[in-house]
Image (tube, protein in one colour):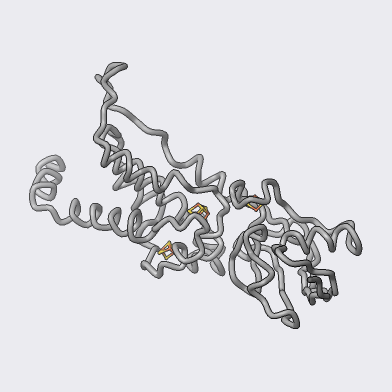
Length: 248
Ligand code: SF4
Ligand code: F3S
Ligand code: FES
């Protein structure tokens, strides 16, 4: 079963652009990326689109479909009515390079700012042991495919370029939380999360969790527990006393 679908795609570059209307063949079982590829092959050979695996695993084909951050390769055409206009735009939080391709280097910069796992200095090879429960906790976060849809949707930076310097976004706060949960990590992740990565900006709206294609519970399992540990530490009377004494 085929039909002619109506597509509206953002075309342009860093200088500016506009939504353009197209009519393109849609076949049974296809996803948005298939139709975008057909558009490229038949009408718009110069249209820029980033993709790689077509299986929801590389995180390259992130875009906004009818305003919702999604992977184009995982968005089925049968979720739309045949006469519905499907609007495809680039991720709004990152600068456009061309058409549907954005410059996501903000994320790479933030990734570099998270110091690597730091084991205690006296730990010898062969002594890296941890409980299964600790392994499983971080396993969930390791499912991240770095599609940056959570970063795209978070309102702290979505329309606020000025917050990008101070806020690393849910993906990288989750990374800091993962390291903080690691029983052998000796770095001070709690101060790091608050001071270098802007944990305080997050007001738990959970939009990041809603768009994650890997269904990682970013807010409930990483950000909220991290906030709780930061608060516990700040208001823990022993920590408070320790800080007072140290400051003297
Ligand atoms: Fe994508 Fe989810 Fe990873 Fe965010 S946490 S980058 S939404 S896979
Ligand atoms: Fe942003 Fe997610 Fe927090 S959307 S505000 S990081 S809960
Ligand atoms: Fe790899 Fe869509 S092409 S996630």
